[in-house]
Length: 117
Image 1 (tube, one colour):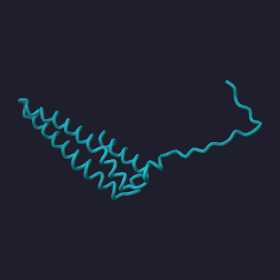
Image 2 (cartoon, helix red, strand yellow; image 1 turned 120 degrees about the vertical axis):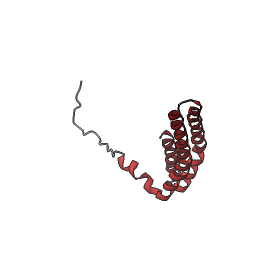
Image 3 (cartoon, helix red, strand yellow; image 1 turned 90 degrees about the vertical axis):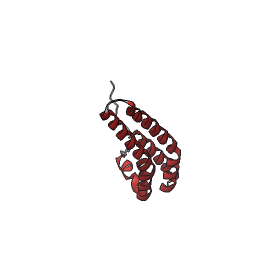
């Protein structure tokens, strides 16, 4: 999940800078792909060490986690998510704009005394 946040936040930064979804996705992916791939490789290496143990259940769990991380890092994060983001275009960013509170400031009125503490 952390890698996904890393990718999306980088794409969002590029989108705010350029205003173009295609450029933002391409640049964000290019700048985060190495980090995501390296982190996935480390996790896969850690999970595959469980294959060295004697317990079959631990071997199965480790192999399953390694395969899941491999699929997640390659298919989901580096192919599926950028493709969907490019297809959605501006719709990717509808929620952050709606959640931003709209603040207005008003000047203090003349003749009104401030409370003293």
